[in-house]
Image (cartoon, rainbow, N blue to C red):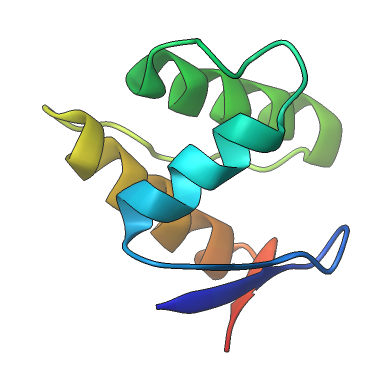
Length: 81
């Protein structure tokens, strides 16, 4: 899958988990945070900054990554390419 983040125009591709791992690697100070914790942090930050609710619940990091990408697309914070 390929998506474009609407805020900065950055294009990311791969599985949902790979996309979120790339996002984490670009987040200053968050590069080594466990993936599930990073996903929760992103959802919290976007909730406060963009005033959107992102449902990122899941049992595994892969589940949560899939939910995060789906929610970014649903809310228009990302676009499918």
